[in-house]
Image 1 (cartoon, one colour):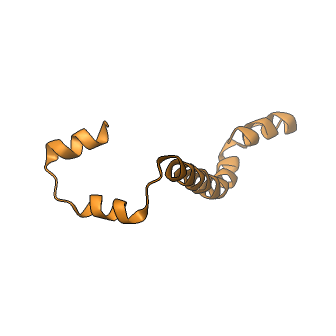
Image 2 (cartoon, helix red, strand yellow):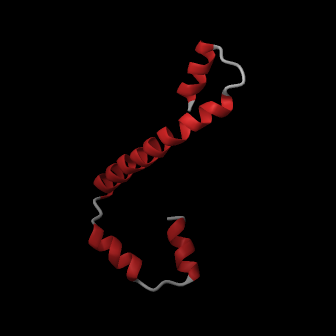
Length: 73
């Protein structure tokens, strides 16, 4: 998004902010999931967790208090 703002400053187009948003959304729909995927892969590599352990954790019955504790661990 910042690149579009800088590009708008260089081109000195006034009142084109709404049109630039139409260009930003498709690009952000690609960039945001890509960054999240990279983050998830790095996080899994550092923690060493596998999908089986994750599935077991999801399948376990937990109370509301246990779920809240897991959020802040």
